[in-house]
Amino acid sequence: MSAVRSSLAAVLLLAAAACRRESRPALRLWALGREGEVVAQLLPDLERRQPGLRVRVQQIPWSAAHEKLLTAFVGGAMPDVLQVGNTWLPELVALGALEPLDDRLARSLAVRAEDYFPGILAATVIDGVTYGVPWYVDTRLLFYRTDLLAAAGFARPPTTWAGWLAAMPRMQAAAGPGTWAILLPLREWEAPVILGMQWGAALLRDGDRYGDFESPAFRAAFAFYLDLFHRGLAPVGDTAVANIYQDFARGTFSVYLTGPWNLGEFARRLPAALAERWSTTPLPAPDGTAPGTSLAGGSSLVVARTSPRKDDAWALVEYLAEPAQQVRFYRLTGDLPARRSAWEAAGLPADARARAFWLQLQHVRPTPKIPEWERIASAIARYGEAAIRGEMDIDGALEALDRDVDRVLEKRRWLLAQPER
Image 1 (tube, rainbow, N blue to C red):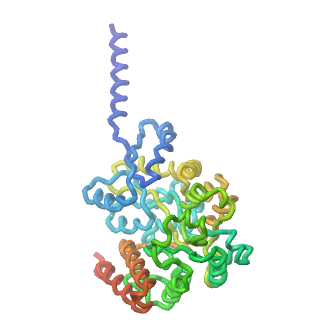
Image 2 (image 1 turned 90 degrees about the horizontal axis):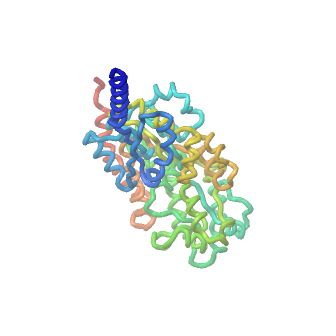
């Protein structure tokens, strides 16, 4: 009878343990867009390594992500780990929504700072504190038609903007009437900001308290940007290009300032006859120092400050940061890895089109790390379009831009003026 009781007790203990494992809440990971669709495929190995650790992924569309993050913070419903676009980090840090990671990074054997592109890593550091681990990277450079560049008399892409200014009209002529040299979508703020950075503009001044778009450096860069449209090298109306891939194949435009997501899109969508007639190149620089500066973009993984399971959350971040997982993630999504060792393992530096991004990522800079940047970026695009369309002259556009940016930063100035307690 005692043997029966012992067996029953053992069964009950096992059942209780199983019940405890089942009742342990799953770690919550919010991931955005395509990344949210595929990241679950990486998680079974982590769950096998750490029995009892389960991860529930919620996929959120990029278009709804910013509002959902803010709503979750206000409602006390933040996930444990979330993917955040790097330009959103300062806003979430200002809200106190994110866990500082420096102590964990210092102890980590899996996440090594020297394995990351410095400009990308810098985007995760706010006021000297690290809040994110880069998950994948992006930046912008030039996609171009190699055949049209050759027809213009250039054996290789120029390394200066002056060189491209010489090449682009010839490429346009080689493509035929009714074409443009370069596509710069009017509603994108990235091109004037990249050019401003290359010309040495700070964008903001006095500790990011005021706009600095009327500075000589930004004005020179903005004048160069506008001149691309005024010369007829770039289309003024967005409707001039109906389908990016078809129009690039037709030669409607020969050069496109864009990011790594288009490596896969161009490979899939361009006709087979064009497969060997396009490539990528790092951005030129005004002074011939190549590559020129571009933007430090991409997404990072962060831990919510309110997570009750920060050790498990960090284990998930470390796992997804492993080079092997970075390579798997790249093959699932096409997102470029954040770690150099993952690039090497995937053979990316040997691929000519990907290598341009490898080179460019050594020369990237984050946008100003303030919560108000998204609003400022929208204003840059708005006044850029007004100047391109001739609705404002360059001085009026930059003066109005600085005025609007100063209004946006009014609360920041007030907060920084308060005495420390």
